[in-house]
Image 1 (cartoon, rainbow, N blue to C red):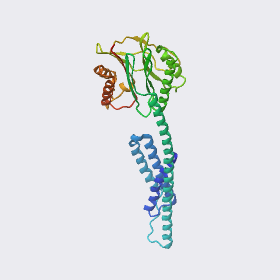
Image 2: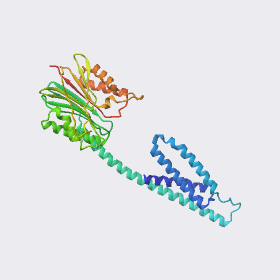
Image 3: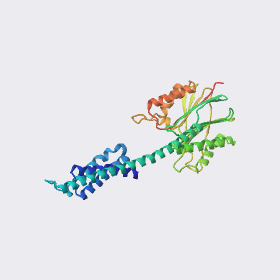
Image 4: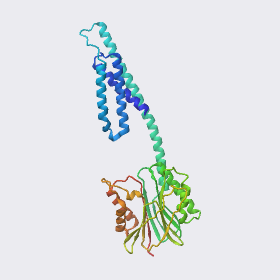
Length: 368
């Protein structure tokens, strides 16, 4: 920023030199220097206001312009030009040529310094951009590996899930682990956007897989994840979490600070929401994370999703909401899972633009 503002100063200091040319070299030396410094400093003020206010730059433009005109009039008043000569002898002509040469040299020097400053800024920012871009591409590739699409069957259950990040790297996670007799399907959403939540998301998956392969059952998954994540993340970060698990004892689900799980019954054509008062993971070092046992007849369909679905807003600021999602889920609940996912996403895209990570995991119990 210092280099950039220096470049701005010298490029626009040229206008101060130009005023002396307009005055035919009649400006006193002190006025000449003041005009150069004033022109450069005003340009820096405009630049800083533009960087700070961005699209609201117009708020500062007119006050700065008024101050510029007022100070310019004060300079003209307190630093009057030398009188215009009625005749010019050889000495006056030589002095005039010398003054024009000084103006020309000042123009060249200011232009060169401004150009060099801008060139250095571009080189530095270019190197930083490509370095950051390389890191983002690496993180994006890691995200693709950690959050692949899900489309599989385990025993009498089928699964279909997709995660769509709002940028190159997302903080959402969909995952399925286990076999036909014991499996856990879960969705997690790390607070924030960008690379940092993406890294925490990778930690969530690693910790969850480690806990599940170590023999821990689904009822202990949320509290164990909370214990692992609490000391590893930034203080202001947390993870919302929900899961559906099948064990030999039956079906269980849990919700921790996450949007409600939707359960569509093919028999009654109704949709039920499963919610819980559990807090998100990572807020406190330990806590109770209750889960409940549920029943699911053949044809039952469950939807696990992140808040990017329900909080997607249109141009009027109206969110898509759980009710719309529930209605779409009910209308398409008997279709193949891929078609249900497409219908839900299409309805979401018609409602508004994507500004948050959006993930959806569909789970259906097949007919016996």
